Image 1 (cartoon, helix red, strand yellow):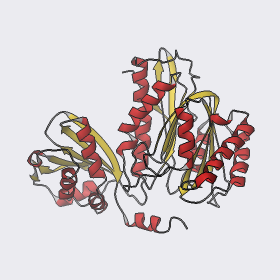
Image 2 (spheres, helix red, strand yellow):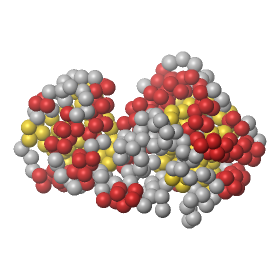
Image 3 (cartoon, one colour):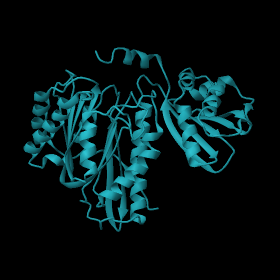
Image 4 (cartoon, helix red, strand yellow):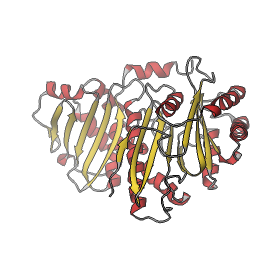
Length: 410
């Protein structure tokens, strides 16, 4: 596998991608709440979308464009109102949004993707949306300031923007993958999570781009959970405009595999940022399941632990309550021998085995609490059953999660 280098950057790190932002006053009165992404050339588009039966209008709009294999030129994103459960009017507003962007940017309407996040059931204020599009178009730009402000504009209850980028080489040609996402609550993805936008200047077929995204999502966004709720608006879009100039990838060769690893590196970074920024969270909680029978078993077991409210509450309390972890493993589904399980806690503050062969190890509760006091904590669950492994990411469950969601609509 060729070297992949992490760089500072986001959605405009790849050649030919521009971003802009504005304060349209959609719901928030004191901050930017719209972003615009633009590709200087038509880009192959791939996407994964929520598996919730209740799907927001933007999900239906984007899924159709992706499934029809249309080239993409722009993505219009708003925060504050989700445009979910809005009926025909909501779908009409997607078309109207795309139409405004198309006429403003002089591109085809079916090359415009749309994304919304926020309160469910409210209609978009279309005059403000259209004014926002027209205000953003002249400000489209590349660089850290433009992409960072766009990443901030799509936030809802997020406390910080989330960006990542990497570079690698294909046939002597430098290629970049960059992205941004938002997500803090209503996160228990079954496709991807909340809103994620990834761009690359790689030249690749739309079919392989979609396959690469689907595989990457399974190992990254689908392995996080904040609160067990799968959103109506979950969307991950991947655009590839080919401006790196590499020979087009049309088969699963070494170049394709390198791209998949680079894409997964970006998506994993963004996914972990979302998990660590869960609503009210004080710590990122990672679960590594090792020596499981199969990779599928390992993934299911890891997700079960990071989704356990009792375990999440124990992490918040810095309490090494290993019984909750073992319990979550036990009801996950895969069969294992509990008398062979070892559990170890890790953080920047140290490493400590708390369960050995299914019974409590001789450990210090004070030392365990100190390890759990870090802002990133890992539980390693050694099943001692095989060679497969997987990782999942979540966060602790705090009082503030309830406070945030008790008055979210207001």
